[in-house]
Length: 315
Ligand code: UDP
Ligand code: MG
Image (cartoon, rainbow, N blue to C red; front, side, top):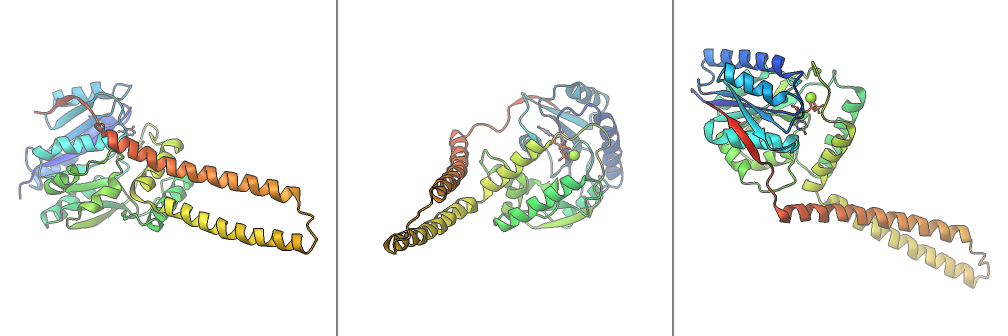
């Protein structure tokens, strides 16, 4: 019953939130220990994802003041997903289960108790699912919901309204470590591990300090990565589009021939120019999408490491 828990928190320029976050997490971890829900070897592991502010200094101080805080420093900014993976992989040999959590504590840490209960009931993966998104802006909410719907439509199995707040057992982490893909989209990969899983519902709060590290541009590229890493449907759609256009152009050809034969061939210049532009545009779009997949293959064959560890503070 006395299992070791690692709470993995990726941090990128989070100096404003870390003091408060660490306080709240420490209170949570000690209360879990007192209730016997986790062992004394449990830790809060902050991953510094190449921050340019004082984040790492703060983590170092925290570690020195209390050894329940651990720190992992990556050599540079590797992105949220890679930072998360580095933390989970560092925790894997040291823990029985690990929970990933954003530094801004938008995800209610009181759900951790229930996460641990579910883990002790024998679930290997526990997904934290947001009840509703009252505190997100209208824009973020609609784009996020649209994204989940689109992913479902494209045949990617992801848990609705679940971000990266989840518990994974050691065994599930070992499963995760076997996925070698460079284009990392954890939300899509974790369901593929396949062990017994369940969901826990919680309310999502606002970021209490600092600003989102996911501006629109990063959000779009994250969504795009998610789609192209998990679904070949866009390529199929392109093929379907090609077929439709081919059929349409045969009809157009017949029409042109018949009008010529009937002697009413005032064939419009406009129509020709318009169709050239249309077809040209569609072709460029299609080449672009295919190029995107080739780019993915390119980075997969290079098989570069996800992250490079600079320093680990753990005692
Ligand atoms: N993050 C990171 N590396 C990055 C961007 C973000 O480690 O390149 C971390 C960030 O510190 C936070 C988490 O990822 O702990 C989620 O980021 P944020 O809260 O800004 O995203 P949002 O909640 O707005 O989607
Ligand atoms: Mg956030």
